[in-house]
Length: 384
Ligand code: GLU
Image 1 (cartoon, rainbow, N blue to C red):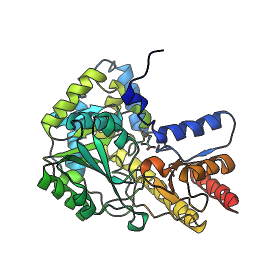
Image 2 (cartoon, rainbow, N blue to C red):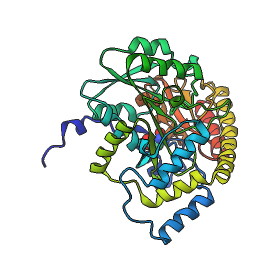
Image 3 (cartoon, protein in one colour):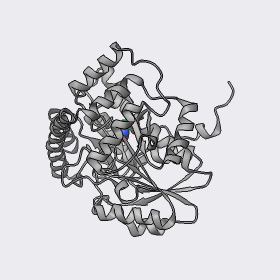
């Protein structure tokens, strides 16, 4: 067989996807595994959005759309950010892609030349470094510790800037830590981008899952150079529908769309229509978001208290639906510890290795309270 390309051969497979697949495979083969791997809401999407998708199919909204997304959805995105974030965009400053992942990939490809450096506070989501590498860039991690609640220090970010730095990534609320960065930290990072003429890429997928305080979009500090990355997966429980969007300067959006037009064309037409309804039917969507947020918060409180009581140090996150737990009491090597949890307690988690979080693992609590309580009991039995 001919060889696989060198760049793909050396690309790491996504560990969030891989560990989730492993848990699902064990489940299929009859093992009662509690999967705390994927960051995926366990709620059905809101009824009005499901109905909109049916209506889109029935009325023939099933053809190709413009590569950058329908005018109607892009206008709904413009309206959403004006209403909720006080940001002013035009539809030409918006691109709709196949999930937040494709927005990010388009962005790194459009921003980076070979050797360009991208600063990413760690622990970080596994796909940033992989995508940066595919775009020829180099990831420069700036570590934030559990003791600091995984909030990065802007001075450490400033110290990591070199003449090759092209962009800084922020992700608040964060996947994998759930940390919500204070506004002054976001502002300092935005100022650094301004001072050094850098792109600021702000991944805001978890905007609607913040438990304490108000969410501030990073884009509000530096709209001229910020690419705001968002999507329907988390706050609207539409993971499998694969709708993400990016808002930013028109030349960047145009470059991203040039790439997208050659690779996938438009995101799924039916899902675009349903997402427009999710954004426009404000009251119904808000009710859904309040209900799910309250459920996640109750689960967060139980899992954080439960893990800390078991001696697994777990900082309290202010957002998203993940906790990072220190698994070193199980094993100093987080992959061994996660494997032990899976094989002996049948609790599936993602080891911190690819998040740059040695000793830790990520647990998603987007699962029922009953499953969380059972998982805690199983971990207790293992530790006993
Ligand atoms: N973003 C989710 C996670 O981190 C989904 C998996 C993925 O796309 O990597 O679990």
